[in-house]
Image (cartoon, rainbow, N blue to C red; front, side, top):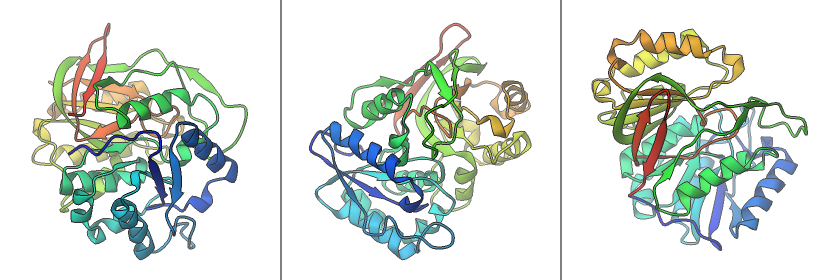
Length: 325
């Protein structure tokens, strides 16, 4: 199921199902608002979006209220999460999935929001988006790649390509510094060559693994799995989290894997990543691409969960094409 595409004049609602918007700096909010309004969108906020407790979030009831109100409101066409965090999975059994199924909207976020992304897709069939938070749209520099990818995914239903950015940065998203360090990107990192087609399923790996054994975990059968993690991960943690996922009964039907670029603080180097992948006999016959522009570095691609994709990976030519319908 594909929601109505966003178009100028449409209302975008900002909600905080994980960390409160109160932690995002005012200038970043102003810039995100300005950019979206320049595109013709009308920005509104959930009633509880700035509430917070000692854990920098707020009650399950308040977060669920804002989520349901955003989906029920006829004027709202798209929903952006404020930021990520740690506790979005608290909401899963309190969500009215029938409400979402009856009121499909563009829904976008990443990181901790993976729990909601995957649960919504699994319970309703709604294609939704692993992509920028509202706060992400307030990052000052090298923003165009992130914006173009977001618009490609949510404003039309034509096929589009996830291409490598020309540069990337590991600088903290929440700092308003003028001087950011950008590193030249020389294409993707092809770990294993091959071609594949399948449905996109994935997001933040450590959050995705929280869904194992629950009623909210989508099948990996015939999936193109995309995974990333932040600097709290490290090679040993990433390896065991990936192995845990590969123990799922339908993981032997994976078609390909896309791995988001790691933050430098994780110490997951290209060499370490290649060694981890090559140790997995389960993965020996499928294409695997690293350093894809999604996850906790800048810029950020928008990936539609549940959409069809085709991957072609070789040393000379690597392509990731997405079809939403």
